[in-house]
Length: 224
Image (cartoon, rainbow, N blue to C red; front, side, top):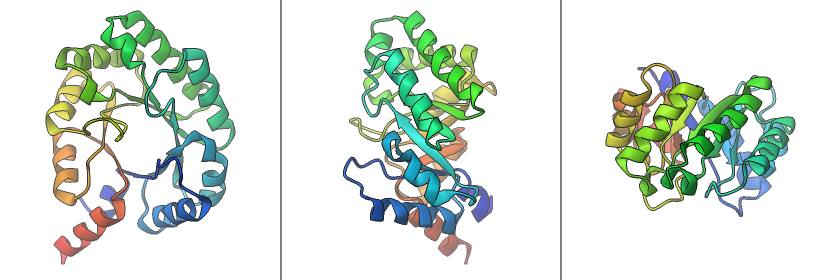
């Protein structure tokens, strides 16, 4: 793997609720300088981020129903379409954790079909955030099996705002369940090159992290 290949796996992230335009502009500048795949941001700033990244090839990634996933399907659908209309070309939405834990798989499937369908309509990537720290292994497998059927582009480990983030074990479990039908994104707690490479080795093809710059700089140092 070379530097560009690694950078193209990174969604460079700033989801702080108080992030201002100066901070977000810096995020976009880093995305362009390091050739990250996407800037991951809250949906309300999609228009600003898109304007900063226009023509760079870096995607604008909007987080939907972030970080809890408790909004109704209708609210998530509206937020998804609104973000896309404001320039988002990737969507990371949090599934309804409560309904999954209740065993309401039909709800989870319907929600996934609605959001994935909107993304397909606009030719936008769709990622489904599980928030694994609140789930049992059986619940992770159930959600992943639903995703294997619905086929969003990615399933994702975490928001980064739960009690813990991505683990190698969870990434491997998710990948084993969906196989080649769906990709896996690891997010939360990925702060260094060793952790990033471990997630990739386990099956992740995208990494969500606010430490993308440090990871690439560490990669450069290791290559010297």
